[in-house]
Image 1 (spheres, rainbow, N blue to C red):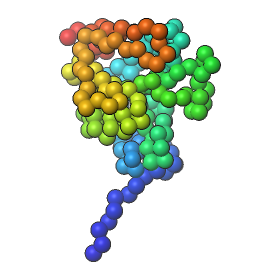
Image 2 (image 1 turned 120 degrees about the horizontal axis):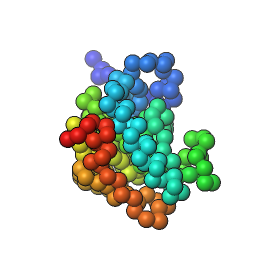
Image 3 (image 1 turned 180 degrees about the vertical axis):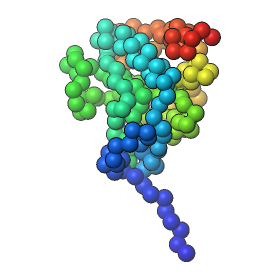
Image 4 (image 1 turned 90 degrees about the horizontal axis):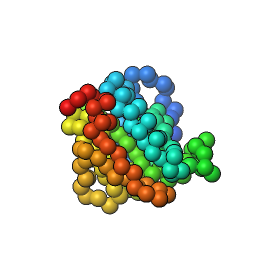
Length: 187
């Protein structure tokens, strides 16, 4: 009997799937990733981080923040929905089209038990190949795993991150303890 080859998905095929409010569909290097919709703590973390990052990148004239579901096609076999991402401004304003987004300054995923393998292995490898800085927010551990292109290991942050995205004249200090306290309550 001939061996069956695994199905290789394209971004276009994932985009053509019918809407499913209880699941989230992505593909990375042709592998279909299916995960449940996020829980409340996850969404609270996304909201708090969007407010925090937007308050830093917009006044500095560096970029703007977008949230999922906002698809990003990295290649014909990779379509992802980072929980949030930062992109450069387009002529001083928020980009209005996918083409205006330019190269992402940062992708962020909030870790969930159902997505841990996708976020820590599959997506991480693909994001780093695309030369995109990547943060994994681990709510259970109250840490941020920061991956830079070329890294073999993340740096782990539990109190703060100093971030200087392309175009920033000065580093931006992001205090993590208040962020985690807002999202999860006191430690």
